Image (cartoon, rainbow, N blue to C red):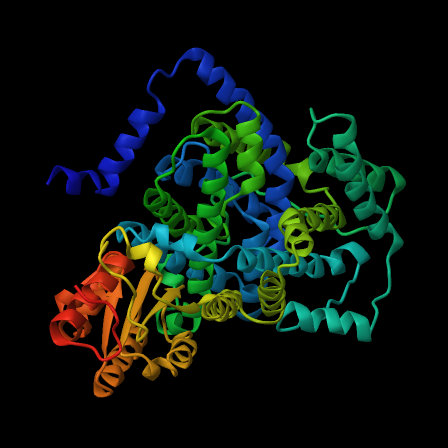
Amino acid sequence: MRSALRRLPLLSLLAIYRREFAGYSLQSFRRDLLAGLTVGAVALPLALAFGVASGADAAAGMVTAIIAGVVIAGLGGAPFQISGPTGAMSAVLIVLAQRYGLAGIWVACLMAGVFMVLLGVLRLGRYIAFIPSPVITGFTSGIALIIAIGQIDNVLGVTEPHRADNALEQLLHYLREPPAVDWHTLAVAAIVAATMVLLPRLTRAVPGSLAGLVVASAVAILAGWEVPVIGAIPRTILLEQRLTWEAIPWASLNDLLPAAISIAALGAIESLLCGAVGANMTGQPMDSNQELIGQGVGNVLIPFFGGVPATAAIARTSVGIKSGGTTRVVSFVHAGVLLLSVLALGPLIGQVPLAALGGVLMVTAWRMNEWESIHFFARARLKHALAGMAVTMLATVALDLTQAILIGIAISALIYLRQSAGSVDVRREPVSLERIRGLRHDLQLPCPKVHVYYLTGPLFFGSVHTVLESFETAGEYRTLVVSMRGVPLVDVMGAQALRQIVEEQRRRGGDVYFSGVQPSVREMFGRTGLAALVGADHLFWAADQAIVAVHQAHEREGCAHCAARA
């Protein structure tokens, strides 16, 4: 009963808080305060950029980061997570905004938040980790492409952008009809990109993205360049354009359901992956189900403030950890920094060129790619991993993101099944007298009609054909000893194949013994009736024990081919 109560979200959160703040001191607060200030400086340009990239505006990005920094951090299952608008989420939202507008984003965000809460309450967080790494790598690369393609208009200063159903179609349009270039906007984006790349080589005291925005904005203003800017930033976190209960299109929720599922899946995956990275960096555990509840509650509330969907961000989380932060106070301080920026620096932020945000996003998209994983796949010549990654990346760019994940998982599953089927090995050999002398000293010569088959690998529908082919010559022998010590699992078709081998051998007047049957395989034997068919006296742990039992049976029943006598 107590164990069940501990799983309740509120009690689970209280337990996390007690563990997190045990021994918390003024010195700990100072570290968290400095880390929060650093994260806030890093998050400011990213919140602005991802707000615009999501199809909303910079103010929506700031509101999202502030609310997420308080609500999600307060209810989440990890002390180190920093949440807010992200590049991955913006790739989903830009398409949604084009189809349904801001109202569509808000309603889908609300529905996705409910889904994530349900995932956490039902304790399904651990199953998110079942997605293969090549799929995640391809998915991330596809999102990076979507972000980069989506910023071409801002970087090149396109005033009449072409709208396409997906990023691939948009890219093809640029190739067919190259847009005219505004050298002023291109120069602004280049200044930001160069600053983000070069400044960290000199110092890491100032975030490159923030410095790039300041430098590029100053150059544009002093040079008098007429470039599009962010515009007025409301000095509030309750935006004029926001979701209200009266504005929810209850009759059209079915149309937004696929988008909501995409947002929920992406939010869950990105948040738990970020949590796994943070847990490795800090050594602190993460409650994945509580994290999903926190993410869900935050995304339920954010639309009513005018924000866009949020998720945990690896870049901001890692900055907080590397800056010495130890608790979720870091996220609270980072949210406070952003709030003060909105209230005090709104007019200045409004003068930042959109091209500068485009430069931030272009560099961010490049850095999003998991280059280390891609290089590893290439160096190791893991063709199956490269294939799964490439298919997922193309599907992400050309299709809905949920479809891309499902396609990537399906491709990875097919590749895995093919490899598993190819890994099955069936080796056969006659009885070795030396191996059984320890159990039967009096055995002078083993029966030539007893043969041992050694099976290795999973016996499932993909490998059944290989196994049956290997037993085609089994009719030459009276008794078979099938060693299954190397078989980790057997599915229904595998059990049916073994049953077929036993029945055919007995029709020929022979018999079959099994050895080394693993517990999970033995359970399948029992459930499919194979254990009853074979008989308990034909199941042994070691092959030599089975062979001795065979010769004892031959001695009792007689064998025309057996030269061994008691």
